[in-house]
Structure formats: structure tokens, C-alpha cells
Image (cartoon, rainbow, N blue to C red):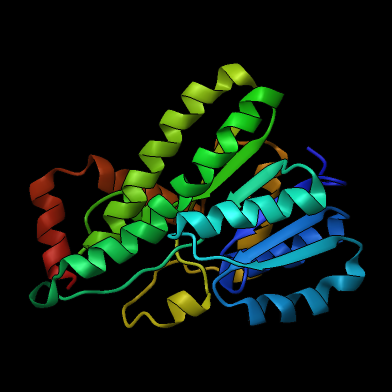
Length: 252
């Protein structure tokens, strides 16, 4: 796939992986629609990439707010007529001690990580099916593998997202619509900078962006990295529950 002249929408583009993808894609001479809740950061990014050859539209958007999502898509279509690739990257996480478990945190995390993707997919699908083309790239996580201590809501939201994207991929294949699931391990971003625990095999942002963009160009079904974390995740998945729970408790 060639990104030249494609219109690419990226959520969560104000920082981390989303910002890295936007900066790298700007050199591909495509149309970029950059969405995030912090529009001032998007506007700063747009200034730094304006000379790379791509057209850039920045819009404030809370992905959990369906009306804001609808409004942003409509604004995007007014300027660029169509959207070829939707990189649905917005995500939040929070380490929560079991003593502080509450439904409000669960709702907040699922509203962004899971329903924040569905809000876009629902609106994109009719046009993608009608045109028999389009690509949805959902950013999940290797944390989907098991229920890690203090990250239950985050792990559950990413697990739900991965399963949903898999189902979507099966159903949309007949219409020529591609669905890609991105499953990063630890990537050095402002989000992971807040973590106060060990993050094995953490990689820098530039490397993560290169892997993701190469995977999208090759239209890979699943883009997962880094390799040691992928192997570890696969081993954890088949590990007997009693052993996983023992190791997870020891690691707290």
C-alpha cells in the first residue's frame, strides 16, 4: 500500500503513538485528520509537520462522545471528501489497587479504549461497504493476554477490543474492507512514563512507529511487537491458570 494521496484519520494524535504516526505520515504526502481532546497540542504538531508535504486538519474530539465523533467525521469529509484509513489509537490506562476498585474508572477506560473505537467504526462501515474499500486500524495491546494485577480494567478493555476487531475483520473481508489489529508491548510514551513498575523489553517510540507503518503498508492482519514480549504473551496465554496466578501474585 502507498499512503500517497490517501486520507488518514488518527485518533489520540496529540501524544505518544498517535503523534508519532502523524509526524511520520506527514512525509508521505497524504491528507491527515488529527483528532484528540487537547487541540492545542494538535495545532502545535501541525506547525511542526506543515512543510513535510501533507495537508493537515486538526479537530478537538472526545472519542467517548458520539456526537463529537460524528461532527469530526463530517468536518473531515467536507475538507477531504473521503477517509481511506482510520487509525483508532486513543487509549487510557490506570493502575488501580483492588481496595480502590470503582465502576467510574471502569466506565471511563472502556468508554475510551473500547466504545471510543466503536463510535467511529459504526459511522465508517456504511461508506466503506458501499465503496468496497477502506481500512480500520485498531490499536489494542499485548496486555489483552491475561488479567494482570492492578490493570484489570485496562486489560479487559483491550481484550474486548481485540476480539471485536477480529470479528469485524471476518465480516468485512467480503466487502474488501481491511481490519488491522495493532498489539504493542511497552512503548516509551508519556503514558508509560507514569508507570511505577518494571516494563520489560520497552522500545522507543520511533521504532514502534516504523513497525506499525510497515505493517499497515503490508496490510498485515495483526501487528504485534516487540518479539520477546509477543513470545512471552503467547506463553502466558497457554500457561495453566493456577501457575499464572501464582506468578502474578509473586510479581505484585
